[in-house]
Length: 390
Image (tube, rainbow, N blue to C red; front, side, top):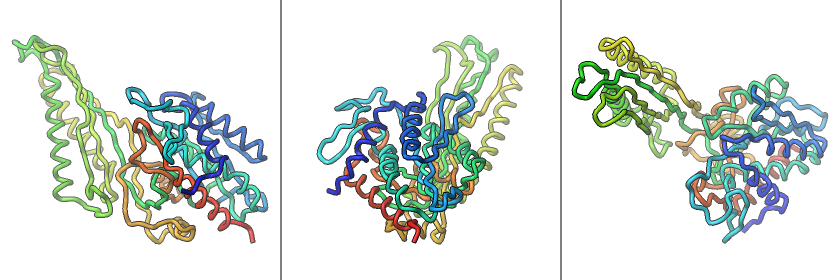
């Protein structure tokens, strides 16, 4: 077992102790990390949300000449998922060590990676570097990567513009070049209620919702049968599902309302915007038929979350750097989403590589193997050596 340095474990304990569930503010964590960085003499740029409730943070270790442009981005999200309704063997917000693993909410996803980066800041600062390193902490990744796009804009406005990056989602320290997009859509149908013995006086929201459900199931079946396909994924085609449906007002009432939640996860050969436009057009057709019965009826489609996919070519500079740093290069792609696609779309080509197993994320008794933190420390050490000014 490669035990990580005490500084890394201490940082992990500090980070886990902050309840940064997405519904909460992440500012206490951001402020503590920024204060630590500034104590080292580093610049810590805090980019708050418009309401001031949350913030992104970028800590820049400059190159040997004091330059901050370009360089390597090391990115992790500060938020985590809730523990509500989960049975934990120990306090989810206090790190506990058992059998070579560290338990606590966010240990794998992804405060373990952040802890390794923060513990490595002094060695990055002492190098010196021929390129800067930027350690980035974002907000609201877990609810649709909401903080990543503003973060890209903030980095550009600050004149930083990293040339490439590593997003430290748990990948067992394998370099992941691709993942699917994720799109979550709510469709709310409003009909007209009536006594169920007088159906001609109402507009049945559930029955019309069923048309959308059948349409969406047909989309899923077409992708499964006809593709396009990418065999690097465990599920080689774009997937679609109906994840939730809520409706009805009573057992003897023509239902006035129904809300369905649809999801699709697309491979690179499928255009997210085209799929959403087609769904929007279908919903408009349903609305037109409902309004033909009663003009008061409506259908409202809302894209609740949309995360772009990642499809980094094998000859990209960031892949070459990962290989030079000893990362296992694999053609495998993953079905979960990350901020890497958003950063790449914003001009910072990224791959995914971080300690821990995604299978341990979001679960009760979330944990990370101590060896994984040691492997991440070793990777960061090799990165510093690679960037060391000669």
